[in-house]
Structures are given as structure tokens and as C-alpha cells.
Image: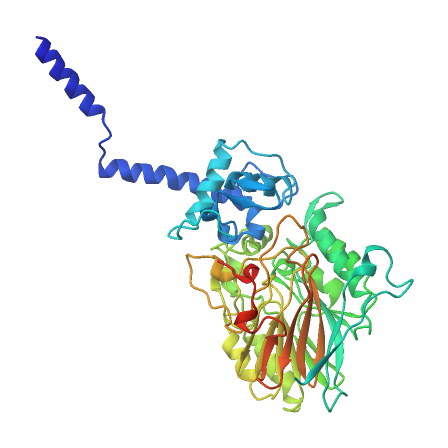
Amino acid sequence: MKWILASLMFAALSSQADTFSKEDVARWQGEYDSVAKYGRTLWTNSAKIKLGTNGVACAQCHPNGANSHPETYPKFQKQLGKVTQFWEMVNWCIRNPLQGKDLQPGSKEMTALIAYAVSERKGVKLEPGKH
Amino acid sequence: MSFKFSRREFGKAGLAAGALATLPISLVRLAFADSAQDFTFAYISDSHIQHIKGKEFVRNWDQGLKRAVAECNLLLPKPDFVIYGGDLAQLGTKPELDHGAEIMSACKHKVHYVMGEHDYYLDLGEYWSKLFGPHTYSFDHKGVHFVVLNSILTTDEWTFKRWPTAKQRMDEMAGLDNPNGSPFMVGEKQREWLKKDLEKVDKNTPLVVLSHSPLQKIFKNWNFWTDDAEQVQAILKPFKKVNVLYGHVHQIQYNKIGNIAFNSVMATAWPWPYPQSYALAESHLPVLTVPMNRADPFFERDATGWQFIGMNSGRVNATFQLPDNDTRKVAYNTKTDKPEDVSFQDPAKRIPPQNHY
């Protein structure tokens, strides 16, 4: 009886391990894509939520996310005097050109903005610290 | 070297008060045997005056245009006239165009205006015309024939049939990277006008063609592009000295195709990335171009600016006034027969901020 219980527990544990199917992979990719898509609507100021107060959109200076360079972060930002994360620079842009308020780093909106910016750099190699 | 610099600092009492007294504005002057055709004009472009609500406008873009106008008024010798290169407004509304016109009214010189897509696609340039005149025209100045084209037109289907409202049409065209936009073109009607206009012009007369979009194909995704560029270039081909000046790209570009020299002008509002910064699409930045420095976003005016143009023996020399950054000069080199940056053309002389990726 003990042996049977142990083998049942083993079976139960193994079914919880991280094995996944092609369908799972497709679903997860879809989850990411939909968040990146929401990021694009925020980036272009076409989402319901506005990041700033003056109508300026991220895309006005950064078409296709260009020149935001998420692949180079974290990196030393001389203007801030420290190694900085990408979201800190996103918030800098929201506060200044967009005249808005900081987003929480883990917020739905910040995650979406980062997901979008990174999606536009797909295939570009990581170069942390690069200027 | 066939050219010399004459540097003119603005230290004159009364003229250059306050912070402007320190502006290092200088003129590039090329010495040629025939100086009769030599003159200067200033070029301001892409201010994107953006309405928030009521009497509020985006301060940052207002400041760019105000500064350009103030500096331009200090130029000595005085420019013969000013070109405004298009995209005065962001979404083509009456408040934006009125506000832009009001800021421009401080300019002490005669201004010739060029149409940009941000001025056009709300009412197809109707209100703009009331303020500034025709979309397409030409004039002669000191032996040079100037032509202004509306190069931001597109297909009738896109313009008249695709969008439920004029506002949506404007919004769709205003997004630089919006795949719902449409390639710019000069169009058959204007090309015919151009042919007729040039019939009476001697082939030795220097031409300056002013358009908002580049009359060459650089990057389609962001409309650094004019769809019928080759057809326009073919009309210009019989002339010995042709210069095309364009805005739209918010960055320094220059090129030479056959007899046609191309120079872009800066935006007063904000800079745009060079096309090669977008890794997911193919682009063709002219090989001649030494890029401007990458923008430091912490300096609001960095990588924006305006320029004055020296016309020397029928060729264009552009001096870029770049706040918070060094002045750049792209002059026509008569030895190589190309526009070249006077400081950085040699690859060995380039600096890290000119590396865009």
C-alpha cells in the first residue's frame, strides 16, 4: 500500500513538471503578441489610456520603436549618473516630452510598452551597456 | 581648397541681446569667379505645432519654432528670403496653422511656404492656402529658378475613398510608421505643370526644387520616399545644375544623383532615427550622408534645428544650426562635384555619436 501511494505521488508530481505541447507554445506566444500589440497602441497614442497629458506619442520620436534601443539596457546613462534600466528611460520620456506621470515598473502598461519596443528589435543582438 | 570661411559672430550691441549673444552663427561663403548668383536664404521646417486644447499647444514644439525664427532674424548678412519646408502643423487644424502662422509672423523676412502632409490631409490644404497661398509655384531670384512642389500627394483612392472622416485620414497619414498610410507622390498633374514651367527656363539656369518629401527613394516605411521620384528626376535631368531641398526626414541627409544634388533640412520639433536604426526593414540611406549626432534626449532641442543656405554659382551649401550641438556644414565640393560635409566626410574623422544602429 505504501509503495502504491509513493508511486501515485510520483506520478502526480511528474505530471506537474514543466512539460508542454506545441499548442502551449503557440498560446504563450499569442499572449506575448497581444501584450506587445497593446504596447503598440500605447506607443502610438491610440489606446484608451493616455500616457501623457499633451497628446504627444512615443511614436512621434520613435517610429517603430527605433532609437529606443532596449537591447542595450541596462546601461550607464550619463545624464542620470548610474546604470539604468529600460523602464526608467521609458518613464523619463513619459514625464518629459509627454508631460505625464511615471508608470509602475510592473504595471500592465509598462510591460506592454517594453514588450512592444523589444518586439521591434527582434533578431538584433543583445549589447548591454552599448552606446 | 576652393572655398574660404568668413566667420561672423553676433556680438553687435542691440542686435543680439541676452542668451542669443553667444550664438555661434557663421556663414560659409564659397568664392567663385562669378559671384553675381551668390546669395543666402534661410530654411525652417517641420515644426509640428500641436494643439492640446483651448489655447494650449505642446510647449516643446512651440519653442523649437520660436527659437529658429529668433535666430533667423539675427542672420548677417540678412538672408534674401526664408523657406518654410512644410509640416508647420501636426494635425492640420485651424488652431495649429493659425498658431504656427502667428509664430512665423515674427520672422522679418519674406517667407515662401512648402506643403507638408501634416498640413494637408485634414482639409486637403484648403486653410493652409488661405494663409500661405498656392501649393505649387515657381519664382526667380538672382538668376536661379526656384520651384515649389506639393510632393506629399497620394492616390485618389486613398485620399477620397478610403476613410470615413477627414480627421481619420489626417490621423492615418500623421503616423510616420503607420502601415495604413500611403506613399507620397508629386502626381501626373504637377509633373505636367513642372514640364511646362521649365519649358521657358534656360538649361544653364540653376534650379532649386523645394519639396517636403525627398524626391528620391530612401525608406518606404516612413515615407522617406516619393513614389514618382524617378519621373520627376527625369524632368530635371536636362538642366546642368539642379538642387533639391526637402524636409520631412528630421535629420541631415545629402546625395547626388546624376546632375541633381539633394540636401535635407532639419526639423525644429524633434529628430527622427536614421532608417538603418529600424532593423526589421530594408532602407537606402544615401552613401554620401554622414549622419548627424544621435540625439541626447535630456537636451530638449538637441538634434533639432534650422539652416541657412548659401547659393554659390548655382549650387547649395547648407549650414545647420543645431542648438546644444556643433554646427554642421554640408557644402558643394566643386572638385568632387558632390555635396560633402566640410568636417566629417573623411571616414577617419567621424565620431561615435554619428554611429546609428
